[in-house]
Amino acid sequence: MGDKRVDIKLGYLCNNNCRFCVVADKRYQGNKNTLRIKKELKEAKKRCSEVVFTGGEVTVRQDILELVSYAKELGFKIIQLQTNGRMLSYIKFCKELIKAGANEFSPAIHGHTPELHDYLTRSKGSFNQTVQAIKNLKKLKQKVITNTVVTKPNYRHLPEIAKMLIDLGVDQYQFAFVHANGNARKNFDSIVPVMSLAAPYIKKGLGIGIKANVKCMAEAMPYCMMEGYEKYISENYIPLTEVWELDRKDTDFLKTKKTEGKTKFPQCKKCKYDEICEGPWREYPKKMGDEEFKAVKK
Image 1 (tube, rainbow, N blue to C red):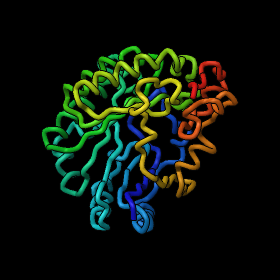
Image 2: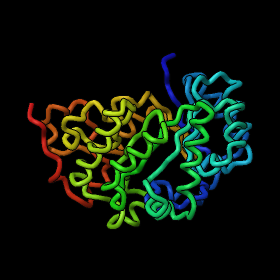
Image 3: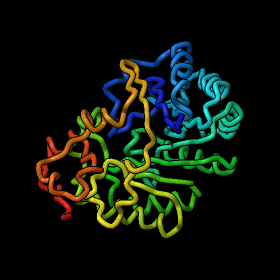
Image 4: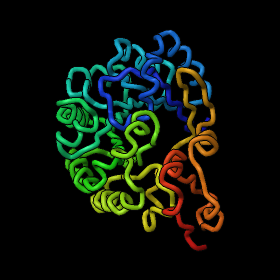
């Protein structure tokens, strides 16, 4: 068995309400119960050696320690929590999660100042909590992999965000171009930037990490936007993944992402990266057209 990963969506309840949240429409679906998640973990373990608990917000569940312990008991070798990090500002809770078996943490941070981050999360005080969470986790010698969603309000600040993350000692950071679903679709004009305008700042933000020798990458950015930084495209490194949502179980997410999630254009056929590039999320060109996407000559 290779290192196949399973992303288990525990549900969609969350203590933030981000302006760009891609699953905002699903909040009404609530959360799965403990028993169902344990069954899913057991089933997924037959094929997967790594698990990512994701949502919604996983840390607001009463049973999160129990679920993490169960994953450890089943023998998952990587147990990652994707989180907004707010609950991890309490060091006691961090220690409990680590003791239960969590060994990778992926907090999301979307600004280099409280004003910017809290504006995007619509949750006052969330920046300070998330920064404290990263400090706590690093103090406890944990692996911290951050995610920053690239939006219209923050893209010009990606270099500052990168500097801050490096100063905080994160192990890896990622810039993910906003996926225009959920709240991001509702707030399209104020949240989704022009990709070709965001690209230089993404590269600058990556350049800072490369220089500091910190692992960094960009997600949902086609190759034609990443000239000179092709090695830093996340899609090159994402392991084979199953995604277990509330209403569907997807055992080949890579395929679904290519066939249902992303899109390509006629000009892509002439591009030297056509074979490996997934193109952008399809919601973007629906609204913005495909002029920006230029074939890279073979």
